[in-house]
Length: 172
Image: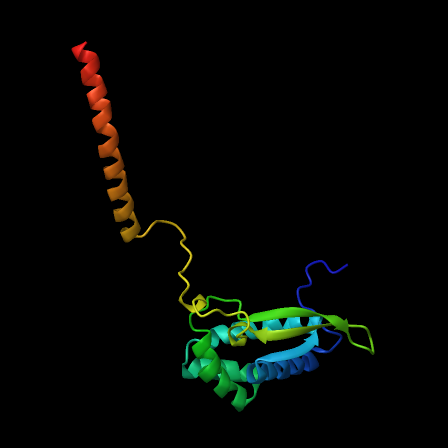
């Protein structure tokens, strides 16, 4: 049983696994899209997403931290330059795993396509970049002012007929 085991070892020793993930992360950053197995893609997602989050803050410390994972100067330049500019407004979920219908011929492993979300132009719309943030919690001041005006206008129109109806009953 695999209770409490969160790391997929991918059939490798730890040093081999770290080198594999580092090389795959560098390839993903440089090429924006790679084809791999589903198991490796899921492990890579956990490895590369924190690095992409660190890249949003372009400081010497964050560059050194990311370099300790990737060990590739070209991928660091691309990550902090081109990629960080595109993912600056995204809160998370920088990668996408698309399962392919094909299997690898040698061992019948399920294959997938892993890509950076903001670099696929097929799924992005022109207006999608200006998408409003989701509301969590209270309404904004502008919305409250509009709704208060609508409530006052509705209540004013409803009160007049009621008062007129009450006066007619009292007069009778």
